[in-house]
Image (cartoon, rainbow, N blue to C red):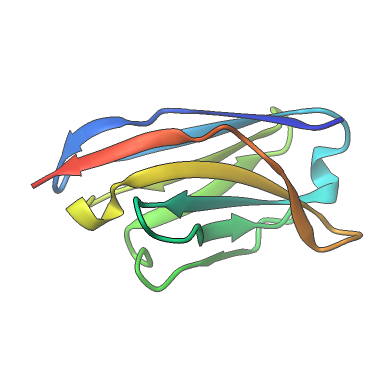
Length: 118
């Protein structure tokens, strides 16, 4: 059983920073690739960034150079540091866990709202 709980969203101005956190509750955190996704109103959910247990990362082109994903395997937490936020970053941000055996994101948090005002 895996549960994910996001925190850290809020209302900020363009150019500000936020750090999202996702607590992983369950067994074998290291068996999962952890990802951050977002979904804006009227749009599909998109991958923002993901990180393997070994620390390899990849980010969407739209956030490269501004967002950084990291994880603490001792604390079972994954972070998304978001800098230079833009109004187009406004969305609900979700944490997801992908089992390395199935390569499917099959565990999700409830999401945290990030709103960036211009």
